[in-house]
Length: 144
Image (cartoon, rainbow, N blue to C red; front, side, top):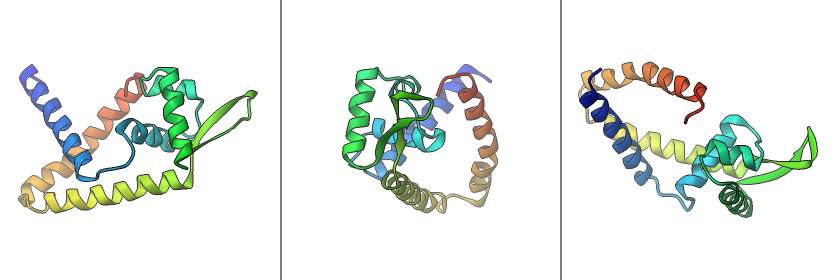
């Protein structure tokens, strides 16, 4: 693939993600939503693991976890493998928040996609498996 095409693709994906985030405002920051999503997908994590996965400092991750816990979206629980440590896990309220955002974003995206031609809609659907494989490859290489 040509560099110019890759740059256009990266810019288009980034623009779509930014547009979609703006369509569903949240009282939580993007970092908080990202951490909650990570906890939902991976299960309970130590604060240090969450910091590494979210490319944050440990103190920054601790502050974020405290805010999520204060809001009722995450909680600290004992680490079953180390009594001295704690894990952070998403709560039912956190799960509900993410589910509500996902429904709202899907509705907004559906409205926008309905304005496209049938051919363009099919092109988008056809690209999904390749995008999922691309993300799976990225995740296995430790970058996300």
